[in-house]
Length: 231
Image (tube, rainbow, N blue to C red):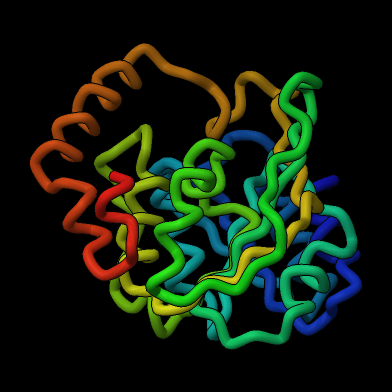
């Protein structure tokens, strides 16, 4: 309940919520239906288990609005998250917020200072985004459907798929709004979570990603973004 309740309680109210039941075997599917029946702006969809990327892709396909963001079911958000992310009223191609980690006190909050970036300036902060994990995750960000287009998360990759999605998306961005905000709570207390649990096969994915980067070259992804020399 905590995740969905935190979304419902946003001070920014003009939102559509798509709950994806990814073949759950517990009560999650019924919980999604309960909220969908209670709130007119919530939709519940059920699908066979396909993993995190498959669930996110299903959410993209089902949503109807220009602005899209993702919240993992084991995380939660403070009431002011959306209000803060939209506070700049910019027409940026992507809005990037920060997050706070729950369950690992040594990590704390990860965020960057407020800044509006043009295509020439995005590369200046990209290394910082990687170091703070802001480039590696799709959460606490606002994407635009018109820019996502036919792009989807790679369902064949189990580790690093979020980073690859962001690389492809950022490559299409001409502007970026960074908002100094840690109102997204990344909950690491559930070690069995699909988005937190490290699996043995992830080692193979790490090796595969190294070769993907080597073959495709990150430099090609950021030609024209000012990040070429940094990468």
